[in-house]
Length: 418
Image (cartoon, rainbow, N blue to C red; front, side, top):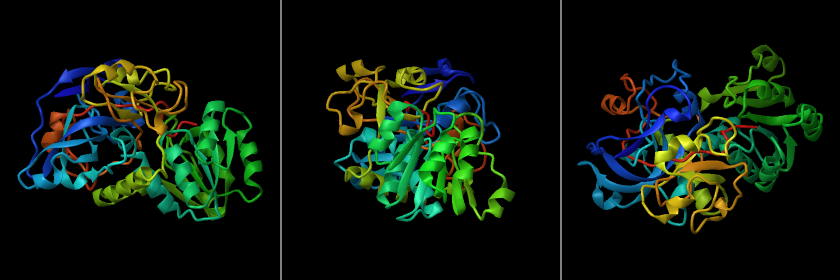
């Protein structure tokens, strides 16, 4: 199978094409022929050698993420009549940057017939985390929510989902195009983070009370500036840190004095069963036209490194979806934020639009999207981790599906970028 492999820690240039043996489905697994790969911004940070205390990764290794594709074969304990030929998504760690992936059958989520595999891949991670965050913060109709990084992978979904709950949505994004995008997606009010006085502008929009819920997907100085905008008795979630400056630094004493509930990414670590339930819900919303993914450029798997340096991206990030395994003329569109033949309405954006870029093998038919940086579930087998370059460790309570062969996509904007 074809893969994109990190040969050493470093920049995008260390992500290179390679060949590995095709995966064989275990008794309770299936092998998925991958159409699109969801790339996560956190994989960029891991590739650079960061977060060693959380991820026991040693080069050479194949990065992980979400995939969409078609079940090609099944293990001895899986009913082929039910799964063979079925379109599915799954979270695959490690080894999703490949043309084939072996996945436990209970980690699969069927894709509705009227939803493209590219859009489906975009929802593997970010939609799950977004739905979990809204449940965790108990956002209700009539409340006001402030969303930083609203033009990022998860931010665009949070804007739509919060609006559908009946909340008043105040979005923080950077620049004219990004602010226009989040307004189009349903934000009631938009504040431009490019202005040095954006916290004051946000405070004026929120009124004296502040926001009932603050969803900070940026961290660092932006998150720290957003915390005072939380209303007394409100909820503040610090779940994003794509800027490299860490999660928002908030004083627990100050939060307690104002009766603010502090939440973080650790609060949305989900069981595999819960992840598949939320992913199925997101796919249903997207298939019904109530949830829209925003996609920038598509790249072949062989150019996964280029996807991280696309003109549609800001900085060195890889967050989004990957492309398909099919060969054909459509691969000619790769490398530009252009529309493959037969684009859906979620693809009709110019190259500089604040959306995701994605990587797809020559001849993609489907459409890409983004995934959540930190929402992982349980771990693959020791053998699978060794095969993809991850150090062996005992199975944890986080359930990661094992992987092998799939294509790749990346996001035009790091998830949670302001």
